Length: 472
Length: 152
Image: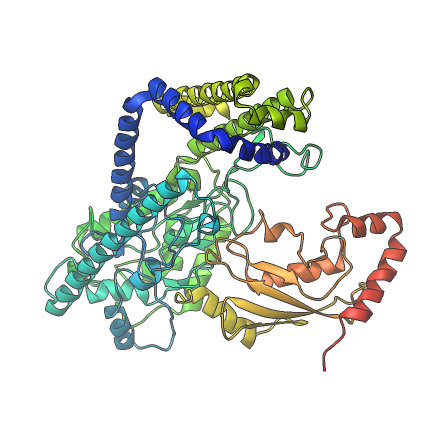
C-alpha cells in the first residue's frame, strides 16, 4: 500500500533537504501565483463561519430553566461529555412537537421507601446541568504532542483546540449563570416557570431506570421501535453510526488496499435487540402538557381538570387509535394516568401494577417499521452522516493518489540510476538538471492533485446532498 | 480524575453484590475504571479447571464504547493472541451500550467454550486447530494446566 511507498520516499526527501532552501521558496512562489491570497481570504471566512456554527451549537446545549416541555428541558443534563454533535435544532423541534421525550433531569438514585417530602427535598436540590462532570478540564492527549517534527497542521490544530477551550469556558460560565438564576428563583418561589410540587411528584414518584445510563427518569421515556425498551433522550442522542469503515468479512484479507468507494457506514442497530435501523417512538405515558405550547409548569395541579390536559388525553387516545390499540383498555389498566380518577399523590400506584400495565401495552404492540412517521431514527438527528461518508471517501482517495504519485516518482529514479551515481550528481550542482525535472514533476503532480481536490470541494459544497448520494 | 459516571458505580456495586458464577471482577483502588478479573474455564472445555486472569478497562466513552479486555494468563485459543487480545464481535463493532461488564465477561467465557478457528486472531493456533483439532485441544489442556493454575 501507500505505506511502503512512503517509507521508501522518506530517506530520499532527506537528501533533497540539502538543496531545499531554494526548492522550498520556488515551491511556495509557484503555489502563491496560482492560488494567491483570494484563497486565504475564503478560508478564513469559512473558518469564521464554522466557528460561529460551533458556538451556536454549544449555546443550544445550555439547559435553560424557562425552556421546558412537560417538566423536562430542551438540552441534555450533561451525563455524557462527548458525542454531542447531534443536530440541536432538530432535537429541540422534536421535543417541542412531543415526538421525542424531553431531556429530563435524572435522579442518581431512587428508593421506593422515600416519603413524598423526602423526594421533594431531593428534587428541589437538582441542578439544571451536571457542569462538573460534563466540562472537566481534562487535557485531550494529542499524538502530535509527542512528535519531534511538528507539521503546519499541528499549529493550526493547536489554535483550534485553544478556541474550543475558550468556547467551553464561555458555555460553562453561561450555564453557571443560568444555574444561579434558577437557584435564586427557586428561593423566591414565585416564577411560574418552575414546576409545581404536583408536577414534580407526578413525574418522579414512580421513576424508571434507563437501561443504558442507569439513572432514574420520569416514566415518560422513548421506547425502541422494535422491542419497546425504554431509553432516555440523553442516551438516545449518543447513539450514532460508526465512522466510515471498509466492509468486513468478505474481502477483508484478500486485498490490503482499501478502495475508497468501498467504505461504508451503516445505520446503528437497536442496542437492546440488535434489530437494524434503530429508532424510537415516544408516546407520552403521562398526561402532562406544560412548558412550551402547554400551560406554565408552576400552574400544574393534579386535581384540577383543565382543558389543556383534557385535550391532551384525547390526543393520546387518538394516537393510540392510530396504533390500533384499544385506548380504553390502556387507560383502564393504568388508573394513574387518568386525571379524572387520579386521587392525587396520596396513593401512588404500586410499581408492580404499573409495570404490569406497561407490559400489557407492550405485548399488545408489535414492532413499528423504521419509516413510520412516528419513529425517530438516529439518522434523523444526525443528518450529516452522508457528508461524513463522502468526505472520508475523498480523503482516502486523496491519500492513495498521493501515495501512487510518490510511488511513481520513485520508479523514475530507481531503475536507471544507482545510488552512488545519483549521489555524485546531486553534489555536483551544475548537473542537477535531472534532479530538477523530478522535482518539477512532483510539484506539478501535487498541484494537480490539490486543484482537483479544490474543485471537488467547491462542487461538493455547492450541492452537498446530491453529491453525497451519488457517492453512496 | 473526572467523577465516575453513575452507571460505572452501579455496575461495580452489582458485580460485587451479585457476582457472576465463575467470574470475579474488582476495580483497582487507584483507578476505578480498571478491573482485575478472574475467570474459571468452562466445564467440559479444554480450559476446564483453569483460572484465567484478565484485565478490563472502561474507556472514557463507556458505555458508548466497548470495554477493553485482555487475557493476562497465557492461553492457547484460536481467537486469543499471544498478547492476550480477544477477537470477539461484541468487543468491537457489535458492541451495544445495553451490554455490561457482566455480559461481556459471560461472552468471553462462552468464547472459551466454543472456539471459532474460522475467524482467527492467532493464525498459528487456528491453523493447528483446523488441521488436527484433537491435538490442538490437547495443547490447550496442557497450557491450561501449566499457566492457568489457581493461586494460593
